[in-house]
Length: 104
Image (cartoon, rainbow, N blue to C red; front, top):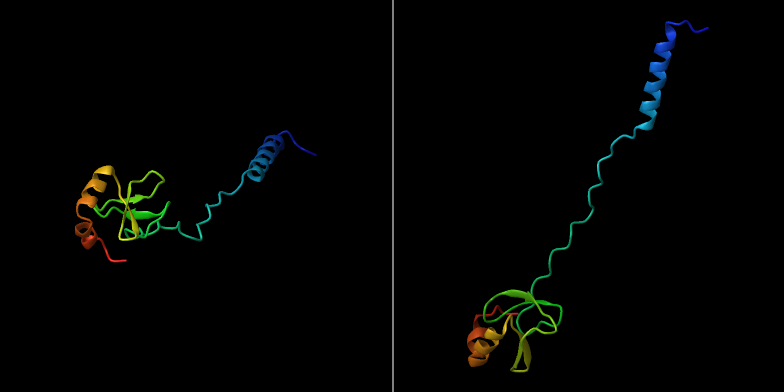
């Protein structure tokens, strides 16, 4: 039989058990098994196609070739450039800019 002195202790222990049963242990987030892929290396000027990253042979800027990217066909290859100003410079002296481009 419960005595009046035991009732508060019984209520406290019941609450303690209920609160412990309802808490979940915090689990750390799992570590990724693979690193995110690095951006693809730019294709050399004259070898890039739509969607590729390439380097403008005039400015040296790396950009992604889009459908509206300026381009010049020279010596059987299509060279994408970053802007119309670079097109004008490239057309004046293509050999100058291709000589400074990295070799494929």
